[in-house]
Length: 100
Image (cartoon, rainbow, N blue to C red; front, side, top):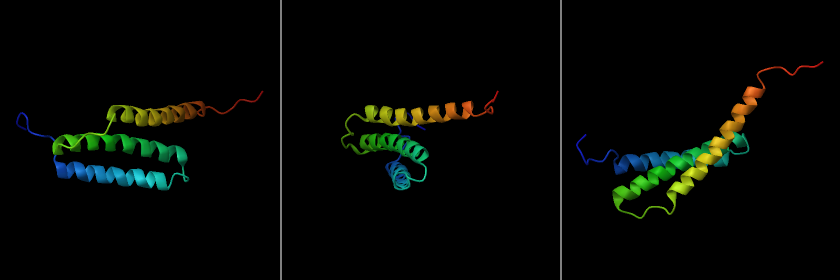
């Protein structure tokens, strides 16, 4: 790849963004099935989607969304918290409860 050549194409980023929109939509639609999992998926898709939007904006010369960094950090924080809680729950369930 030559210096200064874009690593992303507009068409590919649009495809990525559309797929992330779909994933986010399905996670929201079926949130009642498994709320923790679906909210985690939705947050991760939203964060990735914001990256795609920002990059698309750069490539097309359109204005970037306001505060994309804060939005991404917020969405990742939600997913991170849920995964930490899941990990702690799994670690605490490895041993059977002892009864004396």
